[in-house]
Image (cartoon, rainbow over all chains, first blue to last red):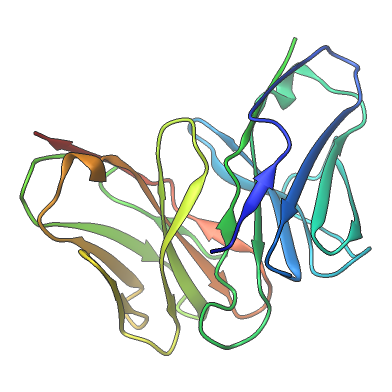
Length: 116
Length: 112
């Protein structure tokens, strides 16, 4: 089974702090994604990466950056956390290709971040 | 621009009933469509993925169908159980990129 893990289930930070959210997958997937989920707004893509050191902006990249130094790990960075970044953050990964199971996104358990 | 709609937003049915959840999309040029389940405060669990060339996929009591020409997918749940209570989300991937475009979800409650 694919396993996607996230470093924390719950996190509380103060405004202005630098925040790192870590995501690790164990299935050698090329694609990795960071989403945030807010009531009434659904899931919104922040960034995704299709290879090591490669990244693409999603729909709401402002205030965030990412890092992918190793294939299995994709980090989301909030350079200076703000209260409007309080949200549930979800990481996902998928395999590139056309075979069975390819392109199916698998999600981690989520990190609920509160910025005070 | 692709839009994905799930109606109804919430559904409550007695245990044991068969039920259908709906997902519609405006642009038929999809690469695939995926159904997910989300329990409160948790991440998403992938249920079924249908490639654009497929008509349906089945897993246990779940059956997902896809009709690209009419822009619709349905998730059929047979013999519903209280443990099926969750929010069900559908998402489409377009031909052009890796991003998923999400519906807002249907919150399903199965009453014992």
